[in-house]
Length: 88
Image (cartoon, rainbow, N blue to C red; front, side, top):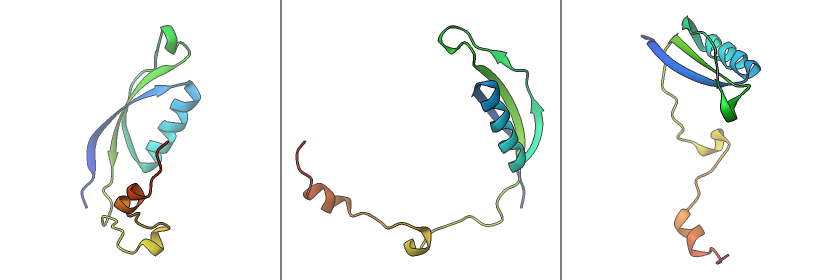
């Protein structure tokens, strides 16, 4: 299947957070372009902004959940929950 080319991501965080996010995104695809880290100022001092451009392969088949027992959860009847809700 074709991939997603030109996925652009702006990241904001500490140096360690940017490194971890870059590693995770690179593992999911191919890093096409990595911008230069720009230090933020004011209340964001100590944090940085980083631009990444990726090429990510599309999943082979979209995942749909039809059986809630294998998904580890169940649907909640919101109408019933609201009917039994007590005022705070």
